Image 1 (cartoon, chains in turn yellow, green):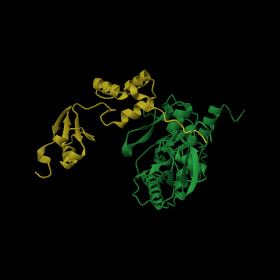
Image 2 (cartoon, rainbow over the protein chains, first blue to last red; image 1 turned 60 degrees about the horizontal axis):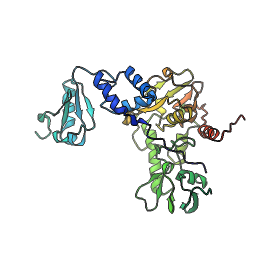
Image 3 (cartoon, chains in turn yellow, brown; image 1 turned 90 degrees about the vertical axis):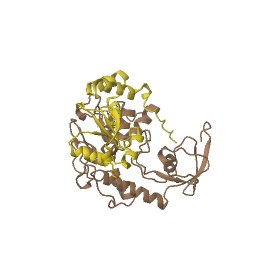
Image 4 (cartoon, one colour; image 1 turned 90 degrees about the horizontal axis):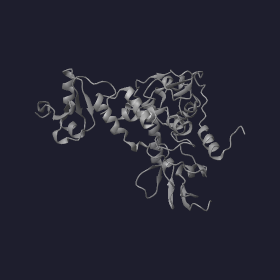
Length: 129
Length: 243
């Protein structure tokens, strides 16, 4: 019987790819292509692997951000507290926004993050008010 | 049986088996001459349990397990074709079809497509799920090959063969959820990726018509899914076909 192929270690990314991506984003506001290339080379990892990780997480941006940044949380608590209406309102007012699966501030649901500051969505948008 | 590994005993569909303790259930099932459908599994590549078609029921175990990544254990009583499993398998194949744009009539792989074969095997003639008709694209930037994302089922065989056998790691899985796709390099056109050696192994192992040679017309693709196993064996045993 053929031997079972060994599972490789989880891609040897123990050397903190995500942390380094965060550092790049902190510096540039997004992940520029050249920086990803430089990072891959520095970590001796394939380009596609670095891009795979960078594109998987919503918090990493691959295009330059606008002047202000607005993130609407789509977590369960925020959904229950009217995140959908919040999104509809923002869309109606022509505000570009991103969404996050959960920002971990469910107590303030529906959560909206404006330029990095976590806050509650407009209570006027809550379905029962 | 080698003395190094303790042998384990069990039964599959009522048929007794003896296997090395590190064997996977899929190896044992196929070794016993039984069949379970697979799409992501390929001998010679690391199993990932992505396609969920090789799910089997193990008595006394609360959930179904993918045979390709489950190691045998002593006293295992396994069933490969319960009515429940057959329903799930058919459902999984229907979801594959509903998720992409699989049109056999003008596909390069028509007649030699593993997705098509599996659909026949599980008795699927239509999908009960609404077809998503996703807006995907075709990457024809490589001089010899093309990638039609519409036909990709994300089995990751190309990703693994390029990484594990060729060592180039041109491919990976990018993005997530319904926008998940196979990416080359920094999600660049394939032809722009310097790491690609144009070896064609990804095209050889693709189970559908997603990766194909440019000269292949409708129904003209000839895949070679046996290549990773041949190469892995040749490397470990230092025995090459041309020697």
